[in-house]
Length: 298
Image (cartoon, rainbow, N blue to C red; front, side, top):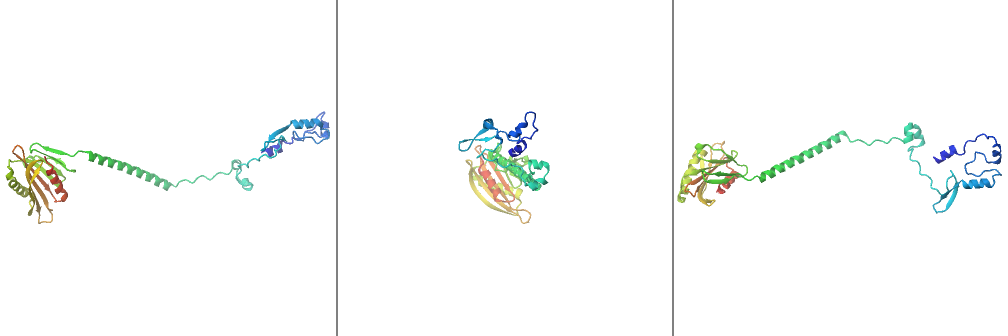
């Protein structure tokens, strides 16, 4: 830009001499010489030297030395300006560009956009991850609440017994004609019922339990074959008693084997408590839960 400005400004355009200036061209001090440059005429004298020296500017070089140069002339040892940023194209290519591109440079290629299918895939994956996190948090919360819920305890004041239900068991309602006062069940596969019994002396507990088990086997099991699995004396919650377990099998291929346990416990008031457990079909889990409920009675 300095060269272009110098080319346009310096030297100033020559003007016709005015009155009283005709002799300047002859003396060599015309308007065509640069400002501050000494004239070429022979009569410049000390005035031209003094004025030229007064119009010289001082520049400090890299080594700290002062040097002078005419105004507008390049200073020796001065670093040249960095090459211009624009244009970014060659002169031949620049002629083919529109005026705006010549001034500001060729337009840059815009960045490549993400494909729509990839964007949808990312959004779907993010939504799926959020849904899985929410569902997992809900499941963990429900499981923690289920673990913190205390087990259900049934208090049967009429039968004089209290027993704790295993997980998954619920208290039910029994018909008054059955004689049982409370009932608990896990769906249709396992059931435990309680009722008050007749006063029984400890030596007669076994015979009473045998009679009860035979009675309930005929009423409830209707098995083609009934096998005794357990017959022994027990002590539950500090109360003497007796228990008997049987397994009923059927000749047809429709009914699966069933399990029944009858436990008779004495009471401090002279009465007794009858606990009846049924499982159909007969499964180890159902047996274990029935027995655990009866052995935890108090």
